[in-house]
Structures are given as structure tokens and as C-alpha cells.
Amino acid sequence: MQALVLVGGFGTRLRPLTYHVPKAMVPIANVPFIERFVDYLEANGINHIIFAMGYLPDPIANHLAKRNSKAKYEFVIEDQPLDTGGAIKNAESLLNERFFVFNGDILTTIPLSEILRIHEQKGALVTIALTPVDDPSRYGVVVTDEDGRVKAFVEKPPKETAPSNLINAGIYLYEREVLNYIPEGQPYSVERGLYPKLLEIGAPFYAVAFPNDYWLDIGKVEHYMQANFDILSGKAPLPIVGKEIQKGVWVGENVQIAPTAKIEPPVLLGDGCVIEDEAKVGPLAVLGKRVIVKENAFVHKAVLWDECVIGKGANVERCVLGFCCQVEDNASVEPDRAYGCGERITLVSV
Ligand code: GDD
Ligand code: MG
Image 1 (tube, rainbow, N blue to C red):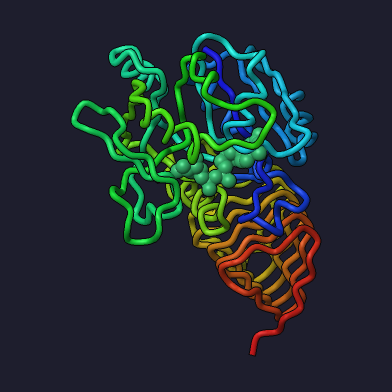
Image 2 (cartoon, helix red, strand yellow):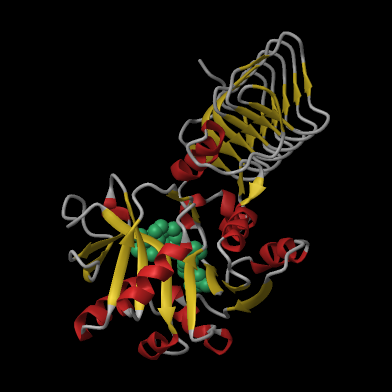
């Protein structure tokens, strides 16, 4: 089965991280997102993947080129952002009679076979996966009848007006015929254009909900952090790369932990990390490769990309640090935000 993955967005809500790294390449528990995503697709029987790309395509394509896989990969690069529908139409010449489409920023275990089963049973033109969320206003909200037929699709409704807490999970199964409803060579949104159109003409448009499967859109800083922590805590049943040296503590190669350092699980330390005396790391910390946490520093609920250096007595809580950030001695980060690659944090706590 074929899949088209939309990885062309700017990743605006992950800035400043995405000024240098496309959203599809941000590390999720030390593994680039796209790698986890392609693992998921291949485990679900997808053997041909088309990537619809726009912003910063090279790191994604270069990474995938190194992958040893039986699946076939193809890349389509847009000259201008075409939005979700325009990006799908732009790949038309490569698409089969039936294919899956994915938002390229979701971390999930939703089984594709179940979507296919419902799609065939209903004779659908389009079938989409749904997932429940607490605040539906930031997503595409979907209402169905008892038969699973879509009755309403409202993209990002004003707060408190959402007609349901079931939202579009960003996984679609399409019959090729649906491409006839998408205009060519221009930006077009499936969420605001195609789906309302299918409802208007009464096309067989179905949805299937997956309340028990893990699902998260990693496209916001808060959710990006959550995805990392969900993997460490086991809430997201996905592999952790590293050796578990004690319950909930995973380490890569050549990690040095000083005898007086405190590691509080769950924690993941990438290759070559150094944790100095009296430093405290965890609970909930993901450190990439060669991160140095100096004496008496504290790292908690944080995701640190490769080569970050945390100064003596510094405090790093509830944040993401891009590659090669430096936190000065005794400085504190601002919580609930991301710092871009190479930033130097000098703010001293009072
Ligand atoms: N190729 C290409 N070109 N891809 C794009 C473009 C484009 O111009 N614009 C966005 N994308 C990709 C993004 O990279 C992302 O993977 C996906 O399309 C969805 O875009 P987002 O910007 O992440 O949208 P969203 O998260 O606000 O909303 C979408 O996802 C929700 C689920 O996470 C919608 O589909 C909602 O209906 C849905 O609930
Ligand atoms: Mg998104």
C-alpha cells in the first residue's frame, strides 16, 4: 500500500527550533521524528512512501537516503507552499488508485488495517481517523452519525463551540477519484476546502475513532516535550534507544555519571553525555549526544539536543534546548519555551 506524507510546513509553532531543523527532523527521545514515523508506516505494511516537501527538504531526504529499508521512497518538492490539498494534488502523477495520506507531524500507534477495513466495508471515497482530545479548538473537529458517516467537519472552531471532542487525527485513506475535487497548481486546504465540499455533495465520507491508541501532534513546543516524556514514561509504547542501566534510566555509549550525581528516572542520556558531581538530572529528562551537565546543575522536565552545555549550578526546567545551546553557570532558563540552536542563556536566577 502507498502513503503520501505531508512534510512541507514551516513548523511555525516549534520556532525557533524549526529555523534550522524541519519539523520532521526534530528528535523524539533522540530519534528523528521522520524515522519513527517511517518505522510506523512500514510496520503497518506501507511499502511505497511519497514525501510532499517544501520547507527545508534536504535534511529529511538525506536522512532517509541512509535508511536501510525495503520500502520505496519518492520525493516531491513544492516551489511554493501549496497547503495540504495542493500538496496532495501536486503528487498526483505518483499516486495509485487508493492511498493513505498523513500529516507528517503525528506520533501515533493507530492501526492502518482498521481504517482500510472500514473504508472497504463502507465503500468510502475518503475515510479519516479520529482521536479524542481535551481542547478540540486547535484541530479539525468531526461529527459522525452512528454509521460512521461524517456529518460535519469544522477546522479550528472558536473555543467552546466545538461540536465534539473527536478530532481529525491527520490520517486519511483516499480513492484516487477524490483528486478530481482538488484544484491544480494553487494552495488549497483539504480541511477547509475538500472536506466541506465532500459533505456538500453527499460523497461517501467516513471516519473511524481510535480512543485507545496513542496519538499526539508534535507541532507545538508543549506537545513536542510531551511526546518525549510519554516515550520515557511508557505512555507512548515506542522504542527507547539506549541500555537500561536501572529501571527507567537509559544510556547510550560512553556516558559518564559522577558518583555523587543524582539521576532520577525516567531519564534518557545519549552517547557521550557527562553528568558531573552533585548534578541532578530527572525525573523526565532527555539528553542528546555529548551533553555536559556541570557540577550542581539541575535538569528536569527538559529536552536537550546534542552538544548542549549546562553550566555549574544552572537550572534547566520545562524547556527544550536546540543543538549546542549553552546555559551559563548559575543561570536559569525561562520555562515552557524552546531555545533555538546555539543560543547562550545568561539569565541568572535571583
Ligand atoms: N507539503 C506540504 N505543503 N505540507 C504542508 C504544507 C504545505 O504547504 N502546509 C502544511 N503541511 C504539512 C505540515 O508539515 C503538517 O505535517 C501537516 O501538513 C499539517 O499541518 P499543520 O500546520 O501541522 O496543521 P495543524 O496541526 O494545525 O492541523 C492539522 O492537523 C490536525 C491534527 O494534528 C489539520 O489537519 C487538523 O484538521 C488536524 O486535526
Ligand atoms: Mg500539526
